[in-house]
Structures are given as structure tokens and as C-alpha cells.
Length: 345
Ligand code: MG
Image 1: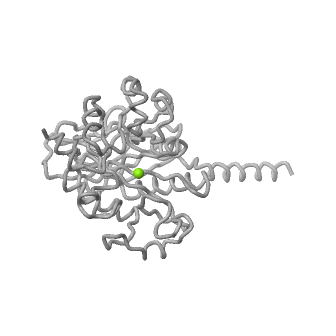
Image 2 (image 1 turned 90 degrees about the vertical axis):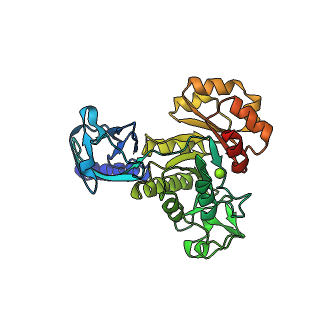
Image 3 (image 1 turned 180 degrees about the vertical axis):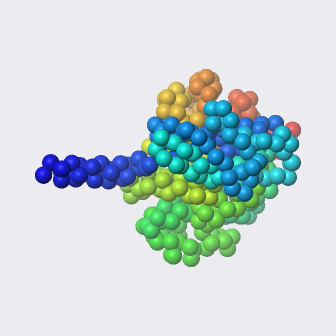
């Protein structure tokens, strides 16, 4: 009887841990890029308290890398051609929890640093619909540092890109994928899936993808389920080098970091002091300009806590000038053309 109870208790533990997302240990890198100047890619780590004993590299471009002291993955060659976009490496780690494997796309870091984040893509002056693939492509073509977009989960767990919870009268979370994929945006495009969106963004290595994970309108648990789906897709598509994360939902921000401790994650809701975000290991704040106006000390506090500073949604020139004088890291705007012109001056 005691043995049966023990077995039942063990089964319960497994069920609880899988439902809380405490999946088996995995490997990850602390970084996913290299450049002509930076040959070290990142440190190979594990998500659980697991010791790495040895590491081997294989895959299409496995021979281009080496693994050194402290499990640092780095490029073997010191010459990087500017037209090289990325290299693919498979890593096998022999660990105290057995063999752990993963394939990664390691990207030549030609990402732009001009602070300009196109809010829902570049749509306002281009005629593209918000959050359309075309709006992303315009943001890439005009050379924005980042292009922002919003992600929801359909009733049958497919990831879609749209701003509002409701599109053409349908609540995305309560609608299945076959109905959602039949919808057309105002520019004639089908409602994009996250997969299509990432596929477009990953054709290039200059503009980052700023992925907003939307809070669920149904339940906090569904927001966490959405987060796990997003993270699994980024992992499957090897999109780590491209994607930064933002959310209004603090639990979602923390869940991203639990799954991907290397990730850049910024909080949007503008109701927490920078020190609190840093204490929870978030990497940035992404606050409304009116809140930053009221809390100007937060610029300094954010920098002291090594948080990146992004401010939304900044469409007026005087606001842009003020934030540039505060030396923020990013400005999220519906007017990327205007801000790009200002930055170039
Ligand atoms: Mg958004």
C-alpha cells in the first residue's frame, strides 16, 4: 500500500511539475551572435542545476566554432565576411542529467543601433496595415533598429500577430486558426501567424524583432500558455538572435526569463520602479512617455540598474528631442521616418 501511495505521489509530482512548466533540463547560450570584432558567441549553460561534463559541436557549420574554457562558444576563424548572415551549429552536452542537444543559428551581428523602434511595424506613412508582414518589411527596408508587433493565441493554440484582442468582430483567443487565417487585413494580406512573421524577420540581420506577448483576456494561465508557445516557436525556429520580448503582464515577463534566462525582456505597464524590475532580472523598462515625464528620476535609476530604456509611443518631435537628450536606448514610434531623419542629423 505504501509503495502504491509513493508511486501516486511521484506521478502527482511529475504532473504538477509539467503543468507548472518545470520541464526537463535544457541547454542554452548566453548570446547568439558574433561579429568581425566579437568572436565569442556566449557561454553554454543549463536551465537546471545540472553540471556540463563535456561538449561536442557538429552540424552544417559546426567546424566554424570551438568550445573553450568555461564552456564559451567562439568562432575559430578571425575573419568574418560582411555578407555572411549566420552559421548553424549543433551542440551536444554530456551532463550530469545525461545527454542534452540543441541546434542554434548564430547570427553575424550587423544589427542597427539607431534607437528607432517601429511601433506595429512601419505602417502609418507606408499604407501597410499595422502588424502586417508588409509593415515589418517596411521597417526593415528603412533601417529601423527594431520592429514591434503583438502576439495572441487562437482557441486552438496557434500564434497570431495582431494588436487588438478582437479582429473583425472575432475574439482571437476564442476563435480557431482556420477562421483566423481566412481573415484579410486592410492591405489584402492574410492575418499573419507568428511563424510567418518570424520567417520574414529572419531573412535579414539588421533589424531586431520586438515581440510583445499579450495578456490573455480569458485567464492568467492562458497568458502563460501563450508565453510557452512563443518561446517554443522561437526555439524551434532558432530565432533567439533576433527576438527581444516585451509585455504589460509582469508574470509573462518573468516566465520568459524562466524559460530563456539569456533573453532581453522589458516591462510595459509603467507601474514599477526600475530597481524592482532589475531585482527580478528583467533587462529593460519600456514605459509610456507621460509616466517617464512624471518620474524623471527613473532614467537615472534605470541606468544605475543596467536596464535598457525604451519609451512609447512617441510621435511628436519635442518628445523625441527630450528623449534623445535623456539618451534613452530606444524610442517606439508610429513615425519611424521622422525619427530616423532626426537621428541621421
Ligand atoms: Mg504592442
